[in-house]
Image 1 (cartoon, helix red, strand yellow):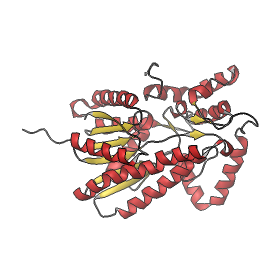
Image 2 (cartoon, one colour; image 1 turned 90 degrees about the vertical axis):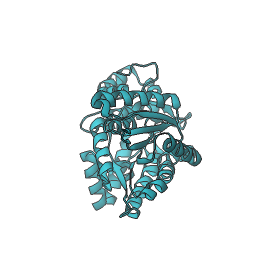
Image 3 (cartoon, one colour; image 1 turned 90 degrees about the horizontal axis):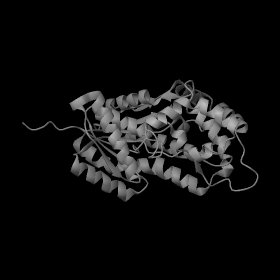
Image 4 (cartoon, one colour; image 1 turned 60 degrees about the vertical axis):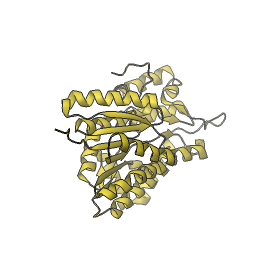
Length: 333
C-alpha cells in the first residue's frame, strides 16, 4: 500500500525563534516542512531541533523538516528554492513568511541601508515568497498563506522606524491579498502579534546608544505582562492559517493598540511621540549608525545595569536558548 501523501509546508525565516516554533508545530501536525534562511548551517540546526521536538510530541505522525538556504529578498533565489522544495517534497500547500530583522535605535541613527534591509526582508521578501507559491496553489484551487506582520505595522513604535516601515507594508499587502483571493480556495492570513518571548533581543541590531537601547528593548521583549509565550503564539498562528482566517491578532496589548489607533490615530501618534522622548538619544559624537548585535550591546552595559537587565530578561534568555538564538557553541537547553 502506498504511503499517504503528507501535506507540504514552507516556512521562510525558520532557522530560529518564532519561525522555528511554527515549523515544529506544523511538523507535529503531520506536515513535511521546508524551512529556509540565509545561514545554511544555522538553518540545518533549526531543522534538526524542529524534527526532534515534533517527533517527541507526535511520534510517527510527525513529518520531516528539511533545511534550505535562501535570502527571501532575492526573487530568483526564492523561485529556485520553491521549485526545489516542490520537486523533493511535493506541492506546497501551506506557506508562512516569518523572516524578519529588528533594528532598534533613534531615527537619526538609521541609514538608507537599514531601511533597504528591513523592507527587503519583511516586505519584498513576503511578496517574493507568496508570489512564488501562489500560482501552484491557484492552479490546485487550494492553499494556505500566512504572513507574520506585527502590531508595529499597525501602530508605529518609537526607535523601530525601518521595522515599522516594512511591517506597515506587509500588513497592507497581506490584507489586500486576502481580499483578492476570496472565493479561490486559497487564503491569506495577516498575523499581527505583539511582543513575544522568542529571545529575539539577542539577535536584534542596535544603533545610537547601543547599550541603553538594548536595555529597554530586551526587557520589554522578556517581561510576562508585556510579552507573550512564543509557543502558545505559534500554535494560534498555525491554527489561524490552517483555518483560513483573514486576520490573527495576538496579545491583549496588540488587540487594544489596534482598536485605539483605529479610533484615535492622532492620539496614539502623540503617545508614541511622548514615549520616544523617554527613550535614549543618540550620542552627540562618534559613530552611531553601525549596528551591533544584542550580545555585543549587552557587553557595553555597566555592571549594575547589566545585573538589572539580566534579571528582567530571564524568560527571554531562556527562550533564546531553546530557539537556536545563541551562538553555535552555546548551550541550547
